[in-house]
Image (cartoon, rainbow, N blue to C red; front, side):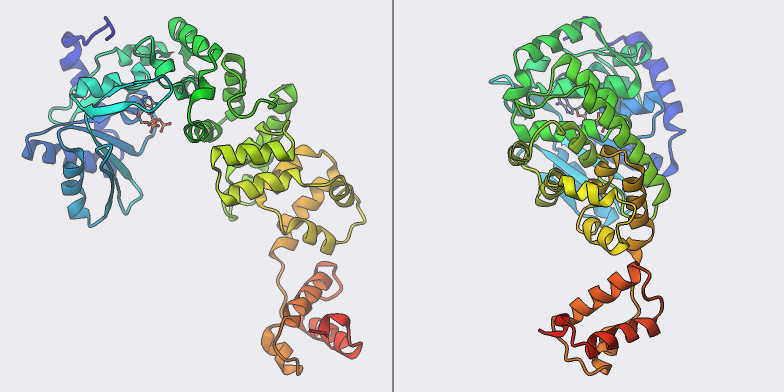
Length: 444
Ligand code: ATP
C-alpha cells in the first residue's frame, strides 16, 4: 500500500466537500443515491460509491454510471434495490456482481467488495471476498480508487487519489500493476489523454517496462479488444493512438501493423468526415465511430491480415463485414465514382450495399472532389429516394406476383434516380413500355 495513506484530518472537510458536490448532481441521480443511502442504513451494511463516478464527481465531469461496492452480498443488495423499480437485474454470480438498468437509462453496477491475486501475469486474477480497502487496492489508478461512504457521505481515499486529481497525475497503486494486468497500459493512456493529465514518472517507467516485455501480447485478445474499443470511443482517439504508439506500440493487434504518420493523417481526415456526417445527417442512425477509427488504425494491413484480426478479436459478423468491405473496394470503383459523368443509378448501386462506416472511411481516404460530391449526393438524395408504384399497381397491370416485381421496382427506381421519370404517371408509363417491349426482366 502507498505510504501516502488516508489523511484522517481531512475526513471531515472532505465529507463536507463531497456532500456539497453531491447536492449539485442531477436530481434523478441524487434521488437514486438517496435510496441507496437509506437502504444501506436500514440493512446496516457498509455501502460505497466507487471508481469512475467518484473521480468524475470530484472533477465535476458528467458521469451517469453508478458503481456500488458492498461489504457483504452485493447481489442480494442489488436484488432488494431493484425490486421497487420493477426492473430485472443481470447478475454474474461467479464474480459477485450485478447490474441494474433503470427505465430512465441510468445504470447501477453492484459488487461485493473483492480481493484479487494474480497467479500469473496478464492472466485473470483469483478473486475472493474482502473489505473495501482490498477492493480499492485491486484497482488500476489512484484516481479510480476512491470511495464515498453511503452511510455518512465521507470520502475514503487510501492512496491520495484526490491529490493526484488536483495535480493531474495518473499513478498505479503498486509496482506490479501493469504486469498483473497489461490492459491498464491502454487505460493509463486513455485517462491521461482524456483529462489532459500526465502519467507520473514512476508509473511511466513501469508502463514502459511492461511494454518492452511485450506484456500486451500476453493478454487474452478479447480483453485487449474491449480496451481498444474504449480507446477508439474517446472524444479524440488520435491523441491516444499516438501515445500508445509512443509507449507500447500496436504489435498486440497484428505483427505487420504499421502505425505511422500516414495513419495519423488518415485519422485526421476520418475525424473530419465523422464531424461532416454528424452535422449534415443528424437524423440517420448514429455511426459506430470506433469501427471507423479501427478501419483507420488497421489501414496498413491487407485484407487477409484484417480477417485474422477480426477472428482473433472475436468481432461480430456485422463488424467484420464492415471492416472487410472497406478493404475490398477496387481501384475501378474509385475511378468510376470520381467521374463527373457517372449516372446516379450507378452511384446508388455502388454505394447502397455499403455501410455508412465504410462510406465515411472512403470519403476520408480519397480526396477527389467529384468522388466526395457523389457520396454527398448519395446520402442526401439517392439513398432516401422512393418510387410511387406499388405491388397493387403491377397487379392492376395484369402482372402475376413473383420475383419480377422486385426487378421492375429496381428498374423504375433507376429511372427515377437518373431523372427519367418524376411522378407516378411517368413510372406507370415506363412499366407499360417495358411490358410492350416484352423486356427481359419480365421473364421470371
Ligand atoms: P469510464 O469513464 O471510461 O467509464 P471508469 O473508471 O468508470 O471509466 P470502467 O471501465 O467502467 O471505467 O471501470 C470502473 C472501475 O473499475 C474503474 O474506475 C476502476 O476502479 C476499476 N477498473 C476497471 N478496469 C480495471 C482494471 N483493468 N484494473 C483495475 N481496476 C479496473
